[in-house]
Amino acid sequence: MNPTLTRLRRTGGLAALLAGVGVVVALKATGAAPATHPVALPNAAPPPSHTAAPASSSAAGAPAGGAAPTTSAAPSQKTVDGDVSQTPYGPVQVELVMTGSRIVDVRALQLPSDASRSRRLAQIAAPTLRSEVLSVQSAQIDTVSGATYTSQGYAESVQYALDHA
Amino acid sequence: MARHHAVARPSAARSGHWVVRAALLACGIAVCAIWWSNTNAATLRTPGDAATAVGRVAGLVGAYLVLVQLMLLARLPWLERAVGLDRLAGWHRGLGTNVVILLCVHVLLVVIGVGLTDQDTPWSAVWEVLTTYPDIWLAVSGMALFLAVAITSGRALRARLSYEVWYWVHVLAYVGIALTFFHQISAGADFVVDPTARALWITMYCVVAACVLCWRVALPARRWMRHALTVERVVRETPDTVSIWLRGHALRELDAEPGQFFLWRFVTVGHLWTAHPYSLSAPATDRRMRITVKAAGDHSRMLAHLRRGVPVFAEGPFGHFTASARTRRAVLLIAGGSGIGPVRALAERLLAGGGDVELLYRASSWQDVALRTELDRMPGLRVRYLVGRRAELGFDPLDRRGLHKIAPDIAHRDVFVCGPAGMTAAVQGALRELGVPRTQIHTEEFSLR
Image (cartoon, rainbow over all chains, first blue to last red; front, side, top):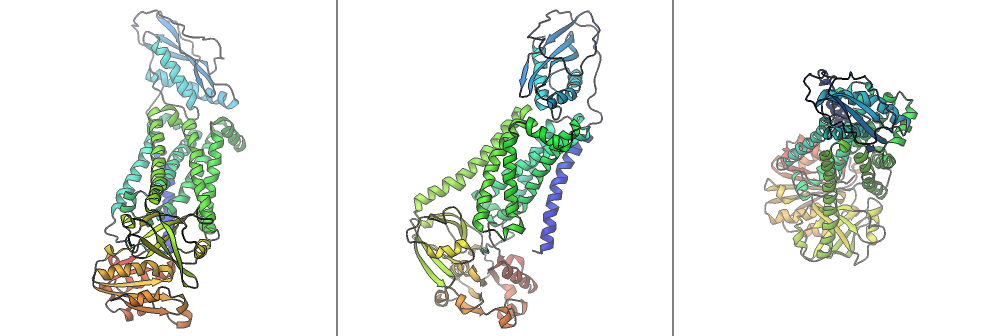
């Protein structure tokens, strides 16, 4: 085969490969526009319940993370602690504030803090994770890139709290 | 180091390669789908996130393609039948550099992504990655090995390194694959959060490992025990060409067609660790096979010193340069250099099928003409020796005019060409100019690197 043609095909192959990877991500990103936004205030009519179960040692870690909106004390509001989820970068634990079966706030009790990067990532990730939980009202949340283990631990802790609410 | 082995390409017959291409593409898309399904579009808004995301996809696709590289040359019988080892080797070569570049993009973008997210300097971003990601040192070592493989296979170096050095650096790719696997599972976001994806990914690695172990280790070993192939004798054909007779049991079971080649590995000092492709130079019998090799590199030179009784591993047979590619009654065989080996074997088989068979043997001097007695004695074969360097002759006997003079009816013949790369390409061009249809030209070289 013609050598220039061969070279052209070869560089063409590489370009196609790289472009393909870029296009996949670009396609995904353009789908972003309408998606997640922090959602919905709690509805009224919460079924009265009162099993405010303090699941585990809630105190421990510094409540890092950006989750700090004071929840106005509605009559049937309760807080439920998730369990401590261990990640390679440190423990993650959340506390859910619930009105009936509705999650109205998520507070991070512990976030990874073993290294400066972990702390910074946790600070970036926590608000995103919180708004995701509030939006989907479950533990089925997407990971925040760069904070995979934190996201996973966060979701596990939320799930535990929901299971024990 | 030229290793000329013609493998015909009856282009119409082997359309199976499109199926294989489609399957590989589909699997690649499936790999991207893993990332797609685990990623929330809303997390791709900052430049740092975008860089990390592209880096991750590049890593996933790169890792997948590395396994594809292994599978292409895992000697899977159905893959070899559908595509042909020659073309598979071509894909492997073509893909190789691109895969390593893709992996470099992965490394670069992940570091850049970390740097942008943390607003770090590039160096502290590198430091962050190296100190906080699990199994990252294994991955870095593996990447270094991939780079070594890519560099030694690049056109610039490949010509300068001996086959043995190239081969051994290439084997390091297996180590690289093992080393990089761990960080994929422990630091790869998709596999940390998605157990299904993790299971699939690990399964993919297991399947590839099983294929390689089965077809590149277990089966050759079993065959070795069954056929007990050994060197019977070494015959010098010309000053730089030797024939090696091999003896074994039940060789018919190998189904080796004249014109095909095996990857040979001689179990003796200096030969054990490399396998080389050489074609059969005579039809195989149940007890014997023969190859004829021209000294072109360290290995082929050393073949002259093989002792009787040396055990031989053979992988194969491979190739489609066989009598089954024939479409016409009249056949023209064109051999140059060590291409005479497979052509000699093929001639015997073609003659057995009847019809008109003519052989052109191109050599730079009479001294270099191998197997002449056999060729002259083969009943029904017309042999024409085209001897002399082009500079001495003042013309190229295998150019358009030369070929037309020898065979005016060439457009109505099948033409099998086997010789050095330059000769093969030139003859192919001349044949096309003479109006020989592509389906009647059977020619190709095989070289592992």
